[in-house]
Length: 211
Length: 211
DNA sequence: TAGATTGTTAATCGATTAACAATC
DNA sequence: TAGATTGTTAATCGATTAACAATC
Image (tube, rainbow over all chains, first blue to last red; front, side):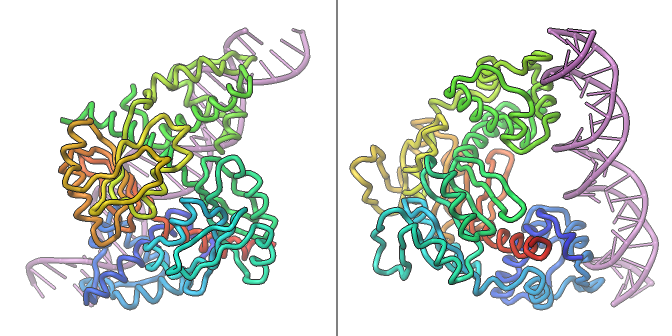
């Protein structure tokens, strides 16, 4: 059954989990499908369908129990508490991501950074940056499976190869080079430049039909 | 007709354009639908359908003319050369994005940064950071329509409101708070934490079925 | 001509939503 | 009971792909 969880569904489940955590911290105990639908921008029916698919039941009048949902989603999505990632390329972007506050919500940790040359990090950050030569050994020793790629465009392709050779199974790619998912390494590309261009296009289009 | 350009299609067109630019710089003159399909990860038929929809013809045996495609896509997508964006929140992420090399490909420019307090930037960067109070005036004076939001989570919501009040029509949101698109302000959310969690899930799932 | 590629239609696939019966 | 919400089915919507005729 879990094999049927598609990408969109997993994204929704991750978002549900985050919202449930927030609701819980506000002291809520129950939530309705339309609350969750509003929060992540889908129809209430889809929320119910998602939970139905996962055999997570609610109460016909009382909605869903937040603690229960939270716990079950944790089981399905897996605890990422002890998951560790590495960052290849500790330039501006890599360093910024390493210090990204939003990561504190997600229950994973940046284990180390790697770069061709030593990088000066603030003392406050308990993160070490190693030379690239140590990447494979480090990943093996620490069972690292997921990496963020934040190197300059020119070395994106060779860095990609290096990560695969180091046993990395998933890469969040911030370089403008569009990398391809292969059977044993999943790629998610985030191309900020394309995102901005896309936004410009949508805004200009939107302007024509709007006020 | 242009009103029918949906989000996925626009993304593909932006990617085609980037690839065509690269091919042109390599001295290529012709390209086939399967080349472009491979490059962006879709079926060749979809590439042909896209061009067909835009009335961009190819040659039954000789493929598509790169110069022509490039030029036409430029007309459809619009020149973003003189487009300017601003960045609200010049912490680590904002500062890193301001210096993002990948932006050099995209033909737009970061006009200014804004923050609650002065930020020290490298001299090499010809970018000024202004106090938040000047945001609305600056956006008006310079007709800024698109912004990157990179403030801390705690002030994401109020910053969002500030941007809308400053006449911003499109926001690329890097905070973990999921903002909602409204009729006169388009939001694209990039939640790095969720992206990483998603990658972990996919990798673990993938591991079960793989080697 | 033979071969290759476009252009286009029909089929497929899949996700989302609308609607409503079930029921607490 | 009346009202509200779940759970589920059927309908809708839309994007992608397969397949092939047209044709250079």
